[in-house]
Amino acid sequence: MSGSRSAKDFFRPLAVGAPTPLTEIPARPSRAIHFFDPSNPKMAAKVPDMVGTVDVLLGNLEDAIKADNKVAAREGLVEIAKKTEFGATQLWTRINALDSPWALDDLTTLVPAIGDKLDVVMVPKVQGAEDIHYVDRLLAQLEAKAGLDRPILVHAILETARGMANVEEICGASPRMQGVSLGPADLAADRRMKTTRVGGGHPGYLVREDPPSENGVANIEATRATFQQDLWHYTIARMVDACAMHGIYPYYGPFGDIADVIACEDQFRNAYLLGCVGAWSLHPKQIAIANKVFSPSVEDVAHARRVVAAMGDGTGAVMLDGKMEDDASLKQCLVMVELAEQLAAIDPELKQAYEGITA
Ligand SMILES: CC(C)(COP(=O)(O)OP(=O)(O)OC[C@H]1O[C@@H](n2cnc3c(N)ncnc32)[C@H](O)[C@@H]1OP(=O)(O)O)[C@@H](O)C(=O)NCCC(=O)NCCSC(=O)C[C@H](O)C(=O)O
Ligand SMILES: [Mg+2]
Image (cartoon, rainbow, N blue to C red; front, side):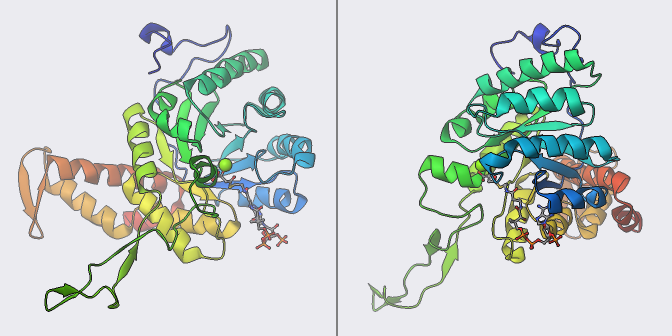
């Protein structure tokens, strides 16, 4: 919780008439946050058919939208939201940066027009709790004016060094905080990393095995295996801890090499294993990758259920397939089983796959 509000005030509405903040962020599946440009007629036309195939549709108003198209994108999103029934698919938007000429109009246009349909507002380039406090109060005022009965949640993108340094206070700045995504391209630039990609690894970031020794002399000319390392490990792990501490959700962001579906899957899986619940999809073909990676495998769910069954009241230790299971491994298995249940509730194929498993 941020130091600027007392515990008794933390869950009070920030404007008279605004909806009461949630005390817990609902665990709604959000394996793929699919970005579309609402000012692009071809993309906009595809949105209605994407409902039900993706957990989150996000109307992007920030980077990747040309300055000349900012107003068209905002208006396009209003039009799409008004005419689309989203069902279980969530509708999010990414507004422009708070220091840009567009952010204020983004919020003052979207909340009155489609606030009842918007689940989450993604805020880019968040630097500290003060950015979340600003959006929090403004949203409360706009929600009150629009007569909304549920709060719009807020998602921060970590894409500056200052934002990274302040990640814990950002996560706890408001009861609206739904989650955090890594913005690897902007973060790399802000950190002055020497990369030019939108997420993913780099062949130069590696470790090399030691040289073989011949007669006690290291032969550094010998062929030696190298292993590419994950540029984002520290950042994602830190983000995951900050989110878990505050009961909100961490996400890997974009993978810009659309053609390299294999490396995209690897990057998404690393994030999944470290604790992320989803990633961004920039192109329709990345939705299936995220849906696959961020859904536990049938084998993992089967194993988790066996551990749950074997552990009885959840205390003590048992042997299963030659391995020790105890209270702590049970807790990991419960994470898997709960996620499978949440996904089965919205994905009939997964429901069938998970139901086919016997404990
Ligand atoms: C990356 C793209 C520019 C590629 O577009 P295109 O060249 O048109 O790809 P295709 O020809 O393969 O497209 C095939 C059809 O699919 C439609 N399409 C493409 N992308 C989408 C989409 N995202 N949603 C819906 N439909 C889509 C095309 O229109 C084609 O349609 P048709 O001709 O009728 O068959 C493009 O995919 C794109 O712009 N994607 C989104 C990019 C984006 O949002 N970028 C911002 C997020 S990443 C970022 O901001 C960095 C981050 O903040 C950080 O700091 O790290
Ligand atoms: Mg960015």
